[in-house]
Image 1 (spheres, rainbow, N blue to C red):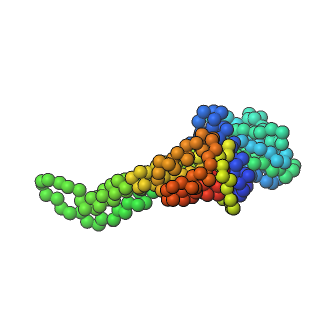
Image 2: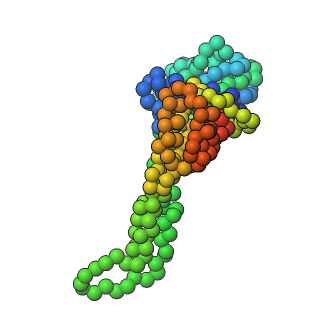
Image 3: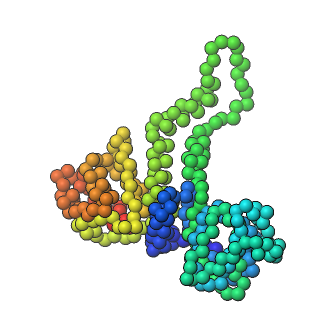
Length: 297
């Protein structure tokens, strides 16, 4: 079994990203969890962990025949973790899926299943969509990790009267307030969201490419997603495409470059590069170089 194959090459990354986007547009939403590419190669009597549930929607593409998936409805939790040959008597109650090169096999996120490849070495590639994600929990856990709570071995004796927070809690509250007031947590959340959304929930940037030069006219390619987030309070703008994100100097002119690109229009960077404001010209070129390296142009 191999996981995360979209990190191996830009070709596989593009295929997974395009499939993820097309699926989301077709069904009207995107499952909350991450998207992954798994590869299964081998000849085996059955999946070694037995009947199990992935909690992910699986689209299985067969490169070499030989694999059969035995699946059951989501309510058959009584079959979970049964190994070969214990699940044999229940095969007739389920639906066998013959993985072949001329078809795509799909099974839902709550579907108990087990695989067998007994006769030939099979090769299968799955694009898996996890039904739920843990984005919010990751952010909450990060905040907790930043708040240092000292172990208190004694507690002051309090008499009747006006009360206030103890020093330890006051320190923790001030630390949390500083994190929120400085937009540190919000910016961290925004960056994670940009990376996730522009990668089609692959949550990993497209493999970088070396770019020697860029044409005078540029446009975003059909596979790529371009997003940005202005932060005027810090005079920066976060620009993201293909699962990458970088910070640039904020300007309304830069947004005027990004808007037509986002709409699918072409932009002449030769004109922009010769702008009377040298700082703006350099910042525009920095964005263009980043987008090119991310494979978005």
